[in-house]
Image (cartoon, rainbow, N blue to C red; front, top):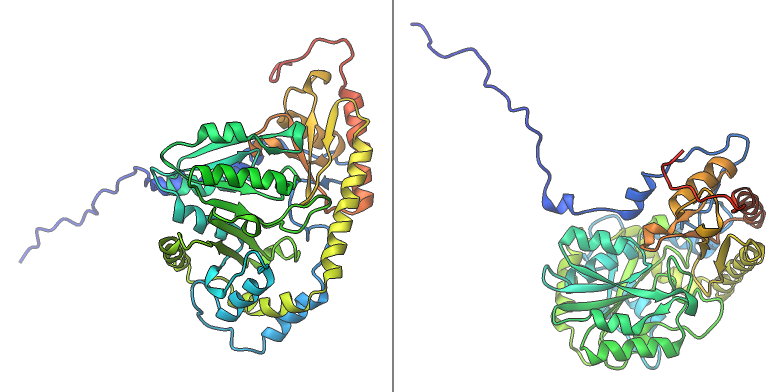
Length: 425
C-alpha cells in the first residue's frame, strides 16, 4: 500500500524572533555610551584607566584580613544550600545591630539581604514604582537607576544637582517635578558620580520636601560613612516621619564589589510600610536569595573589622582627591570639583577653550588616543562636558595621569583658531 505522505520538510520561516518589551526597554547607559567610544590608546604609553569604580582594580585597596578570615571560617559551616530568600536571620540581626542608633533602632525584620546594592535598588524601585507611579532621580546620577526603571516600565523624572553648590539638590526643581503620580524620591549620598556628601542641614531640607508631599525616600547609601569632611549621616537616622528604604552592601566600604552581597534597610517609625515590607520579601524571592557563603560571613565581618581599617580607607581616598585637585586646578581648560566623599571626582571640560574638542565624548576619545588616559565621560550620568575620575588608583598613576591631561590640554588649547565642529575635517 502506497503512502501518500510527502517527504518534503515543512518550510521554515526566516523572520527574526522578537524580543520582549522587558528586554527591549533594558538599557545600560554606561554600556551604550562606552560602546560608542573610539578606544585606541597610544601604543607608546601605558593605558591609565581612571574610569571604573571598582576599588580592587589596581590592587592597592584590598579588604582587611578579617574579611578574608570570616569567609574562610564560614566555609566550615553548612552554608551550602538554599536559605531564606530575604536572608539569614543572624546576618540580618548583625546588620540591624551595626546600623542601629539611639534615634533609629532596627531589628532583623527591617533588613533584607540582596545580591549586591544594585539588587537592593532594584527591589526598592520595583516595590514602590509602577507604570503609573514615577520615581524622581538625580542628574547627574548613577545610570543603573534608569536601567532598572526602564526594565520595569517605571517612568522617571530627573531633578538637578547644583555643581556650584557642592552638588546639592536643587530643591525648587525637585518640588516642581512632584505630581499626584510620584511614588518616591531616590537620593544618592555620598554620591557616585559627584563625590558629594550632603550636610545634615541639606538632608533635613530634603526630608521636609518628602514629608510635605507624603513621599518615601529610596536612599542609595552604598558609600555611607565614606565621607572626607562634613557631618553627613544616613537618611534613616535623621528621618522622623519620612519612610526610608536605605540600600547598601559590602562592595565599597569593605572593598569587595565582586562578592555581591547587599542589603536594604527599612526605616519606618510609624509603621506605614507594612504592605511594602511584604512586597520586599516577595521581590527577594525572584532570585531565591543572595550568596549564602558570603552573607553567612557578614556577622563576623561586621564584628571583627577594626575601625582603623575604615578610617584608613577614607584617609587614602581623601589624599587621592587632594592630589588630583592640586594637580588639575591650575589647568585653564578644565575645572576639578573637590569631592567630599565616595571614590570619585568630577572635572568640568571648558570646551570653549579647546580648539578641536566639542564635548566630553570627543575629549575622552582624543585623550585615550594621544595620552592613554581613560576617564569616564559624564554624558553617561546625564550631564555633558564633564568627566569622572576614580580616586582608587595608586599615587604615581594619579600624578602621571594629571601630567598627561595637562599636556593634552596644552596641545588642544584655543590659539585664536576657529572652533571645529565635530565630524568636520
